[in-house]
Every structure is written in C-alpha cells, then in structure tokens.
Length: 338
Image 1 (cartoon, one colour):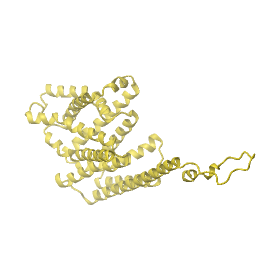
Image 2: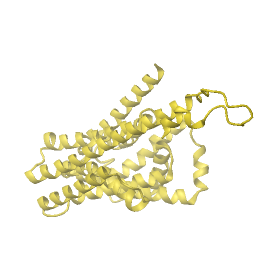
Image 3: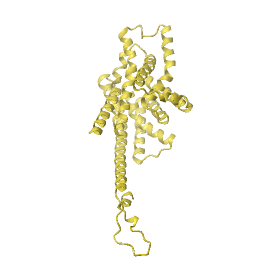
Image 4: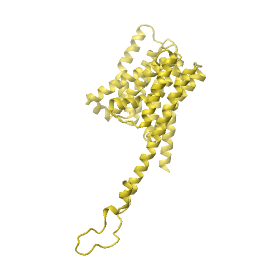
C-alpha cells in the first residue's frame, strides 16, 4: 500500500510540475512593461534565494565542497547555465511577443533533438522506429520552414538549447535542486550586476511600477523553483517511461493557450508541420512503451530463473562413474534465460 501511495504522490507531483510549466505563459505577460532580459535577470537572482532556502530546510550542503574541487564539473555547470539562460530568455521573449505556439513547438521537437544528439555526440544506436520518428521530425521542420518562409528559428533554438542543457545535466549527474542551485549561483553575479546597472540608468521597472509589480518580479524565483522541486519529487517515485509521457503535458498546454487564449494564427501549413511532429512523438512513445514492457518481461524472467532450484536427477549415476547427480542443462532456469 505504501508503494502505491508513493507512486500516486509521484504521479501527482509530475503532473503538477509539467502542468505549471504548461501554464507559465500566462505569467510572463503580467510582468510587462519589464523586458525579457530584465525578467530573466530577476528570475536568476530570486531563484537562487528560493533554492538556498530549500537547501537550508533540507540541510543538503555537503555537495558544495565536492563540487568546488571538481573543475570539470564546474565547467559543465557553467555551460549548462549559459544554455539555459538562452532558453529562458528566448522563451520569455517569445511569450511576450506573440510566439507562444512556436515556442510550444520547440518543446515538442526537443525529444527528437535529444535523440539526435545521443547518436551524434554519445554514439548511441537507434532502433528502427526511432529513426523513422527522427526522420518525420526533420520533415516537419522542412514543412514549417516552407510555410513560414524561413526555418522556425524560435522553435529550433529552444529545442537545441534545452537538449544541450539536458546533455550537460546528464554529464554533471547531480540532483535537480543541487544543480539548479549551482547554475543560478553561476548566473547570480552577472544577473544582479545587470539589474544594478539598469537601476542606475533609470530603466529598472522593479521600483518604478509599484509594489505589486516588484512582488511579481520576485515571484519569478518561485515560478522557476517550484516546478523543478515537484519534478524532483516525481523523478524518484515514478518510472522514467511515465515521466517521458508526462513531459508532453507542458507543450500541449502551451499550444492550447497559444490558440485559444492568445489567439495566434494556425494556417494549414502550420497544422501540417505540427501534425508531423505529433506523429513522430506518437512513434517515439509507442516504441518506448514497447521497449519498457519487453525490458520488464526480461527482468521478470531473470528473477524467475534465479528463483527456480536445479531439477533433481531422474536416476542415480552408475557407481564408480563419477558422473554428476544432475545435468545442469536440465535446469529449467537455463531455458528461461535463453
């Protein structure tokens, strides 16, 4: 019962995390007249405060000393911080400038870009269905490029920057809260410096737009940290295949908001491009579920094989022959394994 409760809590945490990421386009317009860079800088500064409080409450500080003594990890975290800055900044700009649908496409494409990076950079091998999915994704980008009259740069930059961020996170191999703390610590000084400079120029909206606006800018720390904390809670409680399915909630919500709330145009060629992307993601999901079931079946077979004792000999060996009492090849466990 406890295991079921844990899994249910993890599932709800995952849904909440991706749901919050999906509806965050409703938040960024509230921060106008702040520009995207000012919002981004506040997001970096206030996020560090939120995660520092979380780490203090959880008493998880020991990793800091270990990290400081590992220059390679620090370099990877710096790269991760740089690419997530590009991703966050472009996403905020996209939402506040009428490109919510195109931004959602970037996060739909992201799994395909991640797979392509695995092949090109990590030497991973794709299954046939994955090759078809990636090819379908490339076709979708071509259709959208023809429809737009140019490549969908916003979508591509968002997809590639987030995929690169994921690659760096994989290499760093740190917990979500810890890695976010390290990344925001790297970003804190330049972000705070920019906000101070903006204030000296008289262009800061933090103090000029009233207390409500200042509170909203400070709230960017919670908007950043809370979904990541919920995601971390989900990641340790539900299977990876479940998280893989939940990740599509965010761009689905963003897409729906872009059409129904922000009233962005969806001409036929854009529908065609999105249709191809969704087809590619359907193929990926089907293949992932099929592979997950097969892996579980193989693991179950291996456990059964280990649990079945060797079969007793059907007849005693003739005296003096030195033959074993049982034939190892008669063990039914070996049949299961093979």
